[in-house]
Length: 151
Image 1: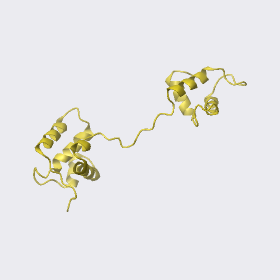
Image 2: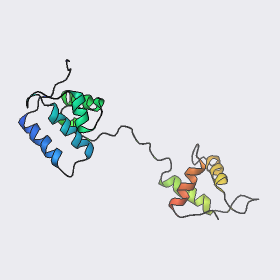
Image 3: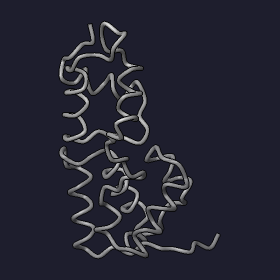
Image 4: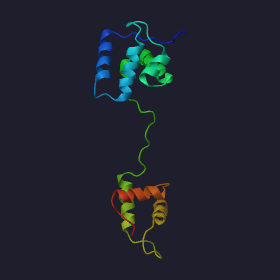
């Protein structure tokens, strides 16, 4: 079977990968990637098939393929770098908004109500345009973070 990408490690790269594979401070993901590259090295002899490498390292064949592809196209540094697969969402409630929500919860409730409820706070936050939309859960966690209760 023709492989599109082949790994040919320099002695320095091989030494670095061996150090990472035996290092206790490396993450399991990085250790597996370094082991995959060591197994795929064509200079050290005839490399295993990707299926054999996957079984030996406990990963999928796709992981083996992607690791080898990243090494060949982007280099060793990129292959061993931690990459977050999904960008995290920025928090909706920032410090200023949190302060306004807390101040609102500590203020007197609307007429006809003896205390604030989560639904009343949620409606008031949207009405005052503190936030465009907000859920009761966001208000609840904001208050809980500061040990405030509505009772």
